[in-house]
Length: 483
Image 1 (cartoon, rainbow, N blue to C red):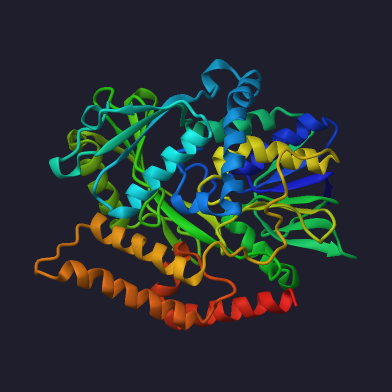
Image 2 (image 1 turned 180 degrees about the horizontal axis):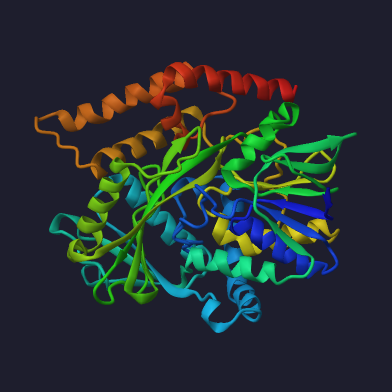
């Protein structure tokens, strides 16, 4: 049996960044990073890797203390990226180095209703409060945008200090550095369960039967973390459950340079907004859909492919119909039942969690990796413990607020999918239909203490017969755990 000082379960951006930070904190630590080499369904390699501290801001985010805490972490992470990459690149040959492609343009059009206007205004508010450099652009002269006439942007804001990195390149760079680190081992496999004796971690067991002995383990497996927790039910019910935010992204090869910066809409319709960004060699990345699922999505669907292509060609650049298809990508973002992350130690001695970061995992990886490494080595962390793993689900909405916000998202979905209302008065019937559906959903859930966030309603609506009892039972177990 192999023995290590620390096992990091998960080889996405968060797991790799944590292992790297641990090796710098204490070069004598024996560290194993466990994860499948192919990373099937992982979020990191399929991500656009936008460094979107402000571009991701929404109106609900600014209304609550947990939302403000997430924004504060994003602001700190944004400041760390340049020096963090500089240190990483110092250990890599030039052809493997990772660089920030600077600049993000947030634009708003009329394709998804009022939610887009509200979130655009929230971005402006956060930028002003954070004294972030910005520039209002003429919306019809945004570099790289060539939309259809009925998709022309109404407003555009340039954020010079945001931007993107190549996610696949970043994961490869971190992997190369760790492969060259003497006391770090990369283990091709998947953690299935934990060995826990006397209230403390003694090792991890892999799906193929191998066992690794360790007194400390970090679960940074994204959506895969839930399967490990489910092996330990008494612990699992004390930690907000993790679901899958399945997303589809697209790589195209353009004939000539197109986008100069990230271009994106505000978050809208249960997703992170339409976005495109430049990659090396005139390649372009576009994303992303977001479908909340109980189990990971390993392959994209024709419906998501059609929708994303339609959005790209209509709202970003009509001329890309002549571009060449390079790849479709599918990934799963870890979304907790309260949409807040899980960061820090648990009541099991030696067990730490770093997951549930939803759309922000890769962006936050330099910050959270160093934070967890410092804590594991007995030093003060870099951020407040706002989101410890063992907690009751955080309630971000009243029932009335959740219904109101969900209605905006459902209406936005309708407009984005090109719904047509041919008869006079249907513009009133359309919202009423969704309002009645939402009222019945929340009534069926019968929950007022833990109001399910709007983002997770799609899971319930897709299969009410199974998911209404599931969530009712889940919240009963939560109450029992915290009685």
